[in-house]
Amino acid sequence: LDASGSPLTDGSIAMKDGRRIELWANVVGVGDAKAAVKAGAFGIGLLRTEMMFLDRQEAPGEIEQMRELKAIFDVFAGKPIVVRTLDAGGDKPVPYMNMPEEANPFLGVRGLRLSLAEPAIFQTQLRAILRAAAGHDVRIMLPMVTQVDELHAARRALDEAHAALETAKIDHRWPIDLGIMVEVPATALTAKQFAHAADFFSIGTNDLTQYTLAAERGNPRLGAFADATHPAVLSLIRDIVEAAGETNIPVSVCGEAAGDADAALLLVACGVTKLSMGAASLPRVAKRLLGTEINPGVQRSTKRA
Ligand code: PEP
Ligand code: MG
Image 1 (cartoon, rainbow, N blue to C red):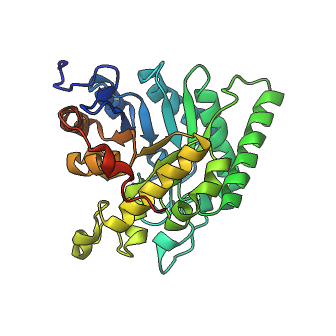
Image 2: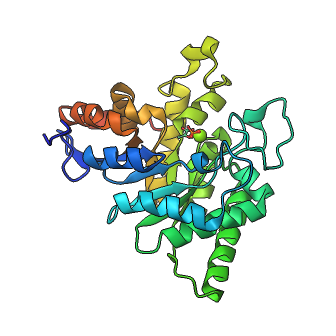
Image 3: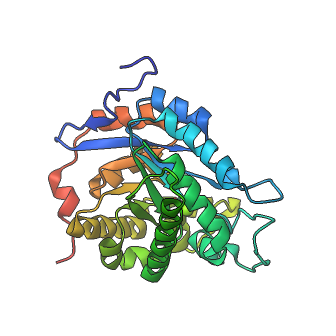
């Protein structure tokens, strides 16, 4: 055990049955990035960028975003980092973006839908990420992707950001992997198509659970429905892992379930080998995985013929 009490040495755990599971961290700022490094995280599996956009009257500029991102990347220098583009909308309104009131914000213009509707703000963020990523192992992830066409549109926007930086001779990371959150049931059900167009998947069990069980996340009267281990959700997760396996792209889980030791075991049984969670959960999940083996039959026995 290291000083923080975490059995993580190289960011991964060898389970008794030989599976190697990587434990990554969910991060929002420099403070929790430092805590995650101390706890031994493999990398940043989800860097949420909403904080840079909320609680202000105008959009943050390219340089400001670049500096904030770079400060976090520097903490994880040499390790892989997954940056998620803005996931506003729904429960996270932003005053300077065109966000008319919606009757059902969680089913509205949120995540990538909003970024594609605000191309200037999206370009600025993509450019800031590419610039901050120079010299770092950074990948970009899109939230709330529902249709393959949205991923294609985002890739065009990313190409445009790269072309502009290239023309201006501004240092930036290129090429760069572009992956998606799988957090909408339609995306999970068509994961095979996405697996040909995305460089990686990360499963957002918070939203995947709310959309699968038709139960708003955070609604205190629906707490019993906030269960990522519901058989319907696990079934989707198995299908996502299988689809990723067909084109050999990485797949992780970055929803709250990954940081819950009991749920994490079920995710591993579904074939997941990368879990991303808040730094505080790393030691607990690591310890649970360390002492456990999963009957190899469990992983595939329920697979459809
Ligand atoms: C998720 O939906 O599981 C997720 C990780 O994203 P967020 O909680 O930011 O919506
Ligand atoms: Mg989500």
